[in-house]
Length: 282
Image (cartoon, rainbow, N blue to C red; front, top):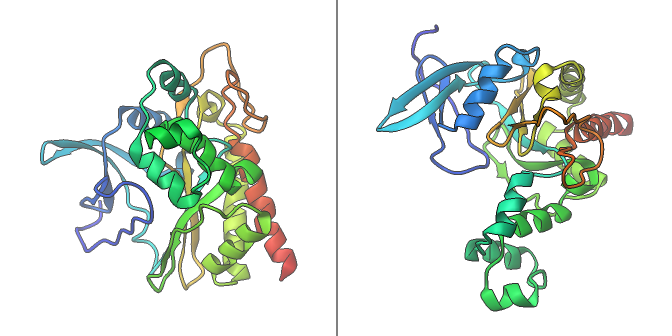
């Protein structure tokens, strides 16, 4: 353990209040049993170097938290990016629940009409509400989730500038422009990320955890600083679910309801190719 010291933590996207800075280089993330089970498995898997180290559960103000490594203190004024991997961000079980017990939500309707006033159906317009799964499926058609298998959720640059308006960033050219902004046109940073992503892909293809899980709604956390140091880690495993014993996923095949494919490797392949394209342009 390192001595207590001032720690930095920047939350780019997600629900406010889910994270707190802990002691000794840790973060406290609001407890999720599914995520806890994933971290316990990952600590015994060859993906361990590519995820924050897990340190168990603590309680603070009557709320349980998973304790994980804070990945930022090793960087000097870091830039960070959240990039969501996969061809969908909802579980198949969520679709079943939405059909069996539909609960239209007004907040999702407001989000939808903010992006596209013409998107709601006549029924949704009359209710002024949409199902969460309907919103999520529609939302993904606007972004590179459906075209490339990954999307930029947001990033914060070293100067503190925070950008999260990527809901309509869909084409490879638009993604490349955003990534170039994030890395400050630095080929050194791009090379660092490429090296790490290729190592991650190799680990994923031999991982017992990855072979036996559907990884949905998970992100890659990108971090770099002005000294040229780079890092990439898998984060957010609240929706990563064990596959039924009779099923396997190659994580590249298209999703059809029932096959549990998540498109994670398809997205990672496209992300690596996109960074390679950026290098060729420079």
